[in-house]
Length: 124
Length: 170
Image 1 (cartoon, each protein chain N blue to C red):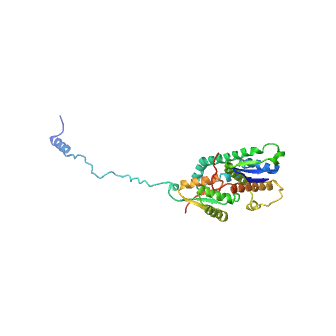
Image 2 (image 1 turned 120 degrees about the vertical axis):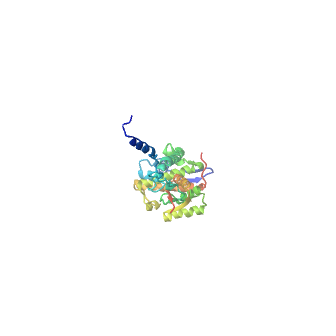
Image 3 (image 1 turned 45 degrees about the vertical axis):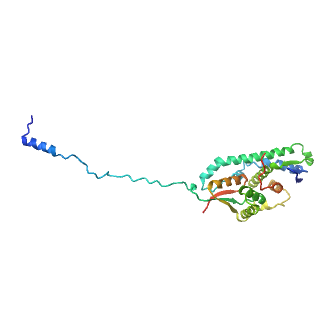
């Protein structure tokens, strides 16, 4: 038996009855993660920039030999090959070809196979 | 010494012992081992220093291929030069026959030798352009003569073979 007076029993019962169901206000989460924005991060060398095949002057290689190599590697006619050879000889360098990196690398490899001083350079 | 082109070969005849020895010195002269400047010249980087990744890949994949290419050419030339083995007294009557199909190997090996010697002695442009330097008074003079002699052989091979076309392999 309860020792509480009736009025108190009633008050407690009412209190329990009217205790609101705890409903949280829909205010959304306290914090929201920022969406991850993935930037394209391709290495610079993969970008389709043209690459140049450059041949540098070398006092040992014979002029006739250099002309022959240009004809063989690039398939240039003799006159064009000679023009490039003379540019190398007189200006110290000549751009023989420009385009995609893979092909440029292949040309440089071939030129090194003929012992010419050749490099790969990015255009611009 | 006489040099001429026959049907499918280049003949070098009437060799004196000195020139015969220079010819025999082609393969060893083409070896850059022990000469860092020559190594650097024969296996120069394909790009400037900023492109470290390309340089590293080149060293790993391309350089071994180039070494094999140069080595194969040198071995072909060494094989042809075996004709000069034996008594030096009989050089005058001996003919070195270079098959036309070996022309590329000879061009490559002569070029290797010229580049290695030039790097070893650090010849200047002026020295390399002086084709009438004489007499030979030092090892350096002899090496310069060697570079020019090998250059003369290269010129002859280039002139006598259709240089713009790659010679068929063995």
